[in-house]
View 1 (cartoon, rainbow, N blue to C red):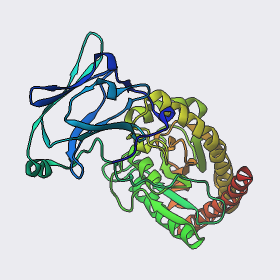
View 2: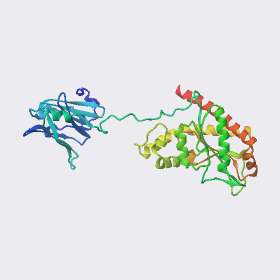
View 3: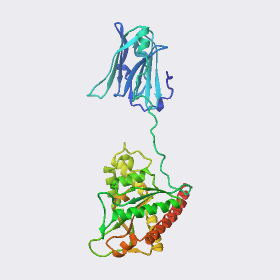
View 4: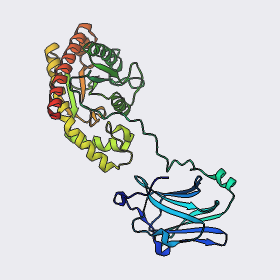
Length: 393
């Protein structure tokens, strides 16, 4: 039995005992409790032996100023104590002068006032029967839960571990993406993603692909894969096509300011709450709280995404020379919506462009593009690590 607490100030005072309307008294051979509470609380009651005790746990009652001894009118009670059991829980312990069994127990709530009365009735028993019935019942409510398995909070890389890169080959499966001259965007980009992944691993980075084969992966699932991989950066790869006009060359997109508010709202509405921000359980928070936290995260992430995009443009320009006339763009692509992961979308070219089709299927050009991207990622990672170490100091 825990000792009565001498620290009532730590109680949250969810409920108090009204001793004026409470009583603990004999009713014929039985012992009856009527404990008036200022409001309903979770509770349980059981008996313990050696010595014989009646135990009532509450979540939570502040016993401060409650003279429960003054409401006892029974020879069946040898002693009474109460206090804080642990954070959030209180305990009342009644030492019984003779063996008694719990006959009835219930909490009566007055709808008009919101107050409650805990009513207990105990009847005479035998030592053998008392000992057989004694013991705390199993209770998920009152038991201390096992600590939940949670990932450590996601921290920015500081150059002291491999960079975790998630590559997202666009489209796949039932969604082939752009098509031209027998080529599909899904197939072309998957091949380049594997080549890029191998090169990044050779450079010392950890790489995860959102799809390894020609399978369909939803846009939201791609973001969830990045979060599960605890990504330091997310790069979606594409090779689009235009039905009108001419365009060629590579371009790099980040999430636009205008699109970010809508992106956050859609994430809050549609994603599992554990997928919104790494290291934070948002299941108990409403959308407003989630949106504020995502906005704060994006304020840190957006400039990092911008720097990554700039490095990629420089890398592709240096190694391939094939850039779109506007190589640096912003849009509201779904895969760029993770608020806490620097994210970019790289259009390596256009399948609608004859020149780009040649490039995208040419092993030498692909190797140059891969080398440019790896160089850009290395440069960005080094800069990002310096900034992270500076912020820590």
